[in-house]
Length: 196
Image (cartoon, rainbow, N blue to C red):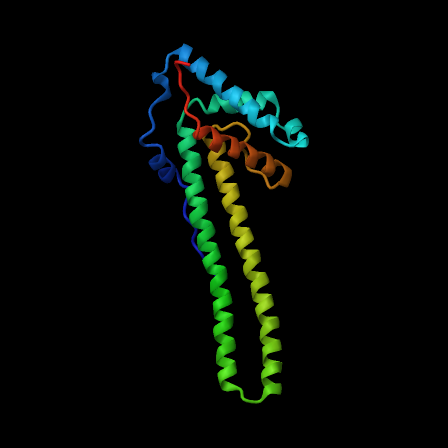
């Protein structure tokens, strides 16, 4: 089963950020206010995490993350990555459903050809074993593709300078990155009002 996943190429990310205003238009005072605002919001989100994750996400990391979010381009990159991930997940689900459909069609074909109930039962058992093996193989391929997509996203965010992101397969570190991504997504929905 060969499949081509949506790309997270530089051109795709550049398209996401084409309409983003340049944060250098802000005065140093406004940048400082925005930084304090972001740090404050991140600290509030951080406080809602389970304690074992609060310990792993330092104040320094939150400050570095806030600093990298001064440029709104990061929000657009994350939005683009989310859209790509949604398309990828739908595509992979379709591939998995196709294996199920193929199995059902093959079973219907056997049922229409075989009239002897004992022979049909034997064939159905063999087909079920074959199908189970095929599903395990398919699921392993899909997980490998999703793992690669995670590494691509980690690499993209690392190259974009987002604090806390680097390529890793460590489940605990990935969980922390997921919390950081959640913070970024939640912050993208909060409007910074410099005059407040």
